[in-house]
Image (cartoon, rainbow, N blue to C red; front, side, top):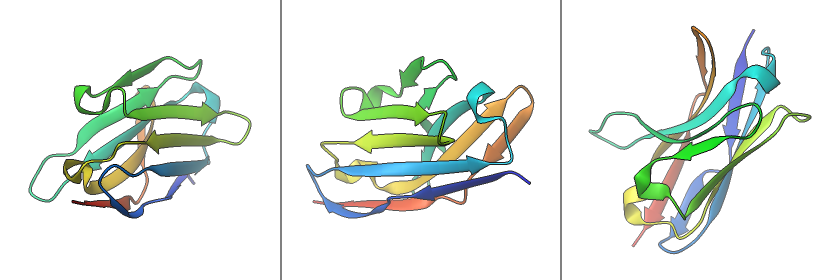
Length: 115
């Protein structure tokens, strides 16, 4: 059974930082592309950042230079370091694991940035 468990969300003031973690089980972690998505109220879910098994990354333009995605294949964990947070970063953040047609999602963690 695949499980993706996010942690690290919370309430932070604008300009602050948070680090999200996603621990995976039930998948061959190193071959999965791992991603962080977010969904704000009334908006569609959007890609924030993704990282391949060998460390290639891509980011949404809105978070470039502020967010950093990384992974530890030995710990089956992917991270999202979020700096210089803005109120518009407020959303539920979801971890995603993708390998071919196999897509799995975590339950999400709330990030709220106050102005």
